[in-house]
Length: 72
Image (tube, rainbow, N blue to C red; front, side):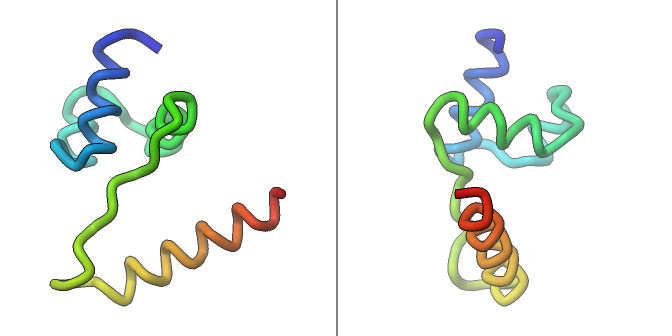
């Protein structure tokens, strides 16, 4: 991974930039972002637990947790 990509992924993990900005900077596949986060030992940023789409975010996190359990 190049230095610019690493910097952007670290900023994303810290909640400093959004997925939309990553797309503008050339990340066209979220799986690449997730792989980069894993490579750096980082986690995706957590969305606030209030506001719109809370239920959808909770379902999404539950699906990811189940998928991770299935691979272990």
